[in-house]
Image 1: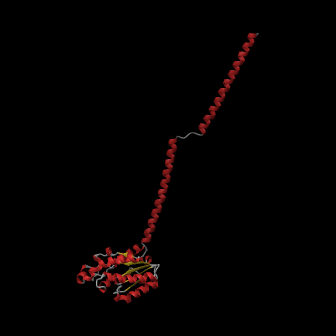
Image 2: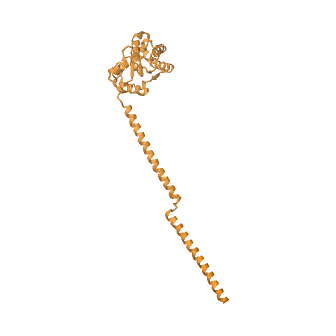
Image 3: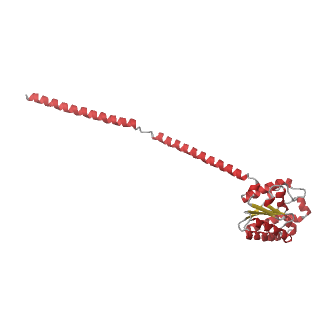
Length: 264
């Protein structure tokens, strides 16, 4: 009887152990299934693949930004070209020119309308020509332009007997008057143009023009106006027979040069 009870007890213990083992196995299978399912539903990406994707996105963004910048630059270039290629009448709309026979050529050669220019032959800044230059100054003050260009000197070569200091003093008087009466106007002074060598050979005073320009440049810096050197624009083929006055080709370049310097 006791043997039978022991046998039954062992059988029950085995059953318990077996049930526990089976239960443990089922639990592990369930846990493993859950882990597998999570892995399938949320796969872990290869870090290298993620980095490659980031680099691709960055490259795409850079290309897009570069494209936008290029488009803006092209639009700006087109706008700058359109602005630079405006007709001279539009560029000089708020400007005025006073001067001698060289400036007179601006409207005689149909480069600028006469409404933008007051100029007369034999006009200079020296005392012998004071009444004419006063008329020019009065006209400029009456117009009250935003930008004023002056062009004198050829007549003053003889009027000042080739003395650059006298010329500069006379020019300073004109500039002082203009700055006082037109305080908001930007003033630009054109250089005295060179002449052909044949003219200098006939009248050596014209050989003083480079010295006139040096004094004029110094004067402009002193009184706070802008000096415009136009000497490099003059070509031999632009001269008329007198060796002093110039053809229409020069005037177009000159007007464009003034507009460029003054940022019209």
